[in-house]
Amino acid sequence: MPPSHYQLSPRSSVDSVALLSDPDTEDLVLPRRKSAWGMLRPSSWSYSRLATRKPTFHGLRRGPPRPLARLVRIALGILVALVVLTGAFWPSYTHLPPHYQALRRAAAQPDVHGPGNPHDEKIFIAAILYDRAGTLAGGRWGDALHQLIHLLGPDNVFLSIYENDSGEKGAHALRDLEDRVACNRSIRSEQHLDLHSFPSVTVPGGASRVKRTDYLAELRNRALRPLDDHPEMRYDRILYLNDVVFDPLDVLHLLFSTNINRAGRAQYRAACAVDFTNAFKFYDTYATRDLDGYGIGLQFFPWFTTAGHGLSRQDVLAGKDAVRVRSCWGGMVAFDARPFQRPESPVRFRADADLFFDGSECCIIHADIQDPPSRQAIAIAEPADTGIYMNPFVRVAYEERSFAWLGVTRRFERLYPIAHSIASHLAGFPRYNPRRDEIPGQVVTETLWVPDEKDERGGSFKTVDRVADNDGFCTDGFGGYRGLQVIVEDRKPGEDGWEEIAFPTA
Image 1 (spheres, rainbow, N blue to C red):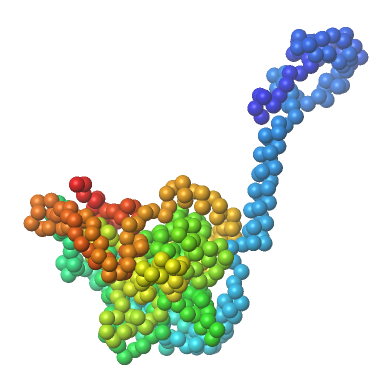
Image 2 (image 1 turned 120 degrees about the vertical axis):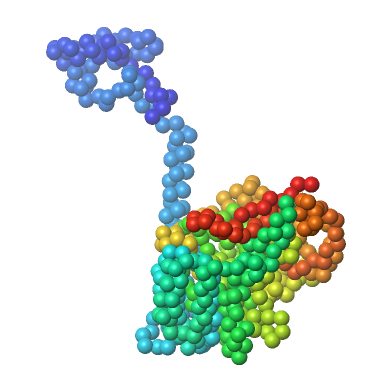
């Protein structure tokens, strides 16, 4: 307790010592006199009274609590009550809607083919892995995938996994997984990927490097190759899985419960999970854009900011299972398969053409499956529903510990919006993106870094006329210039697979 919470005792230490050292002081009456502080001493003291007094601290005793301390205690009490009541009675995204509960009951039926696939839909599952220890295919991820295939019905599933440079352990675990699953499948493992087969760019300094987004787009497309190899096989939905910890029942909700129509079927162009690096922190900021095309705020609930119309944030706060967005990924995403199976120009993953305006291939794929907004529509109304949704009921994580806590931490999320709004504003989120509101086809004049192998710097700044594409909202919002990520060609164990090339100075 601070010294300011004490006041001087009405007796001196000398008096106390004299009284306690005299065995006859029990009936001793002390004369009434004033102390040095002008305070009246008691007219009498008894030994028994002295013996039962509360101990003092250097002649000080605790005074009445100050108003500020009382206010602090009251505030703490209110905060604790809010946390307890919110978690108990108003949890966020905890109580499943009735059709979610019905699907869970159906999935629990024994001896039924595809109990979690109510309409026997055909599902193409795709994944790319980097699994040097073999703990993904040979661990919980592989077990959950095996269970998911059972719930969907092996006859309804095609599994395509592409893995490269994982080493012998990873390849062995993948072969074991292939032997376990009963569905049609294409599982490929390349031990030494030839980067010379990938498109390259000239970076400042003149070196030729492979862009990370070009690399990832190509790998993701390799997992989709069975669609090209067997065009006669038709699918209703494509499920893309990252190396995440997931519950197979949540995958069913993502596939079949998101944005249910009147016929009782899920309706979307794409539906994404929400992925976490810990129990609170949202991960996939690189690919996620709200309905206005803005990036997210700080990486905790409700994730989206009030920028623009703020409709994505409103959907989250309303507890919707179909939060309207322009793009998302979330570690796990379900697509309507039709754009991927068109006879002409089927949708595939791609990278941005510009060197330092580089959007995620996981965002650009959404730009290619939605209807681009027109200038007239932007001017007169709020953004249209893209058919792309984020489902906060479905959550995944990149570590088992984080995944285990997701059911607890979501119960208290309704306490966060005010803090999120203030903190995101102070931090300057969402970041400015000069290409966010571009209309596909419009001609834009701007100064860009143009690669040139003949230039000693590897390129130079030039003013060019550029025709806007449909993916301007995907570019990162750090003033439009976020640097360039390229693949590390001679990757060492424990080393990241890519490095950053800084934006050149003028």
